[in-house]
Length: 65
Image (tube, rainbow, N blue to C red; front, side, top):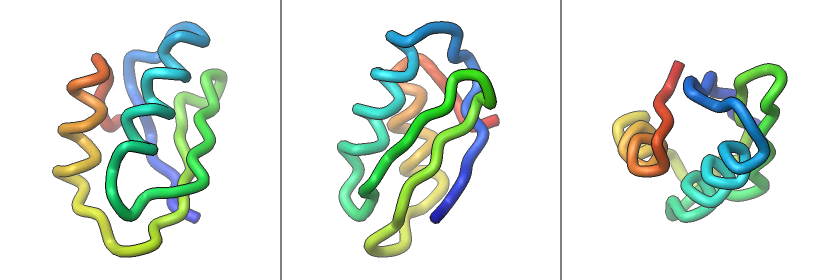
């Protein structure tokens, strides 16, 4: 299980956007996003670059913390 910090989340809509963004990355599965912690957890079926994760989060209006 991989845990990352996510900045810019303030509501359930943000949680949904981050969940959708991460779930859309090939190799990432079992995404869980925690608003109160400002974190996301997921399983990597194959290694995923931090740059790919950052780009997906930025498209959703957020960023790696």
